[in-house]
Amino acid sequence: MWNGKGISGALIVALVLLSVPVAMAATEKMHLIYGDVKKVDPAADTVSVLADVKNKEKEFLFHLAPQASLNDQGKKIILGDLKEGSRVALHYTHDNGKLMAHSISIRNQGSMKSEKY
Image (cartoon, rainbow, N blue to C red):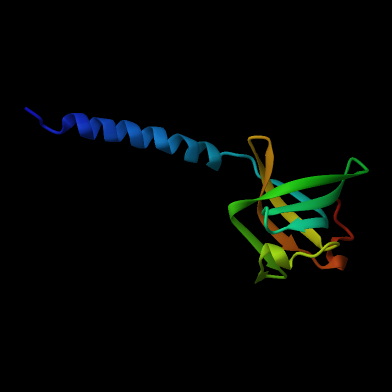
């Protein structure tokens, strides 16, 4: 006779297993980088940013995370609004060898003079 206990037990195990990637993603270390936009590819959801790292200019390719937020002086924008040469502050994580951008903020050119990349 079927009593449903097997299904509820399997459901609990499935929910626990499904929650593991979410918990792992929540513990990913968020990084911050300042730089200048070199290239934007809205079709690929990517942006290339030039930044000084240890006194050397380096180019980074960021993939836009699904829930990424983009803004210009507090106003919400889309990836296509980013222009080459725009100064940005970008929060990102590493995900399977990719740099994932979670937030990109266009910065006032003068606001970063005292900040280091």
